[in-house]
Image (cartoon, rainbow, N blue to C red; front, side):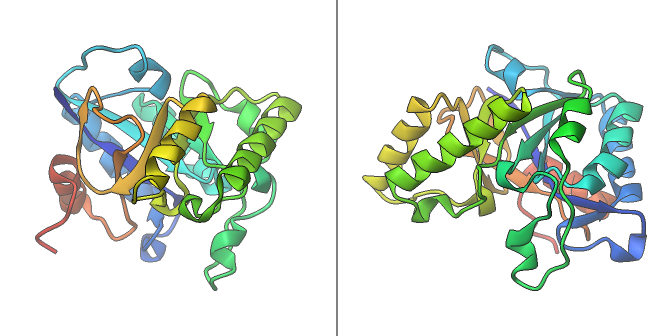
Length: 241
C-alpha cells in the first residue's frame, strides 16, 4: 500500500497577516506547492484513483472545499503555474452566493463561484466533486432528507451542465459514527453512485483505500508555515505545536 496524503484547503488571501484559520495566504500556498514539486510529488484526480491499482511513492491529492472565489483568484493560477491537479468540492445550493453556514456563526462571508466560473475551470487542472446541496451535518439527516439533498444537487448539475465526479466531502467532516446508522448511510451513498466519501481525520491515508467512505483528509490551516506543512504531509496530526 502507498501513503497518500489528501490535503484539504478552504479560503485564500493576499496578505500574510490575514493567514489564519480556514484562510491561507497565497504566498504560503505557493511555498507549499514549490516544496511538493521540489520533492517530486505527483497529484491525482479522484477519477484517476478510481481506476488506479498502484501509485508512485510520492503521491498527493489536493482538495478544496466550498469553491470560493478566492480559490479562483489565488489557488487556480498557482496550481497551473506549478503543474498540480486539484479536486474542488461544490456546495450546489450556494453557487453565486456566499458561505452562509460560516457567516451565520459570525465569521466573515466568503463569496462562492458561479456555475459559469466552474464551467470555465480547466478540466485538466480542476476536477469537480460533491460537497452536498445545502451543506448540512449529514449525521443529523434522515434517509429521506439525505436523498432530497442528493436529488437537489443532481438538479443543479443537470440545469447548469456541470461535470461532477461522484465523490462526496462531508460538510464539517460530519457523518454517522454509530451502527446501524453508519451502514445505512454508506449504503445510501452507494445507491446514489458515490464512489468515495471524505472525512477530516488528519491522518495520512493508505492507498488502495480499505473503506472508500471513510477517507481521511489533512486540514491545512492559515497558520501553517512550511515546517508545519511538511510535518502534516508526513504525519498528518501535529504533535509538536
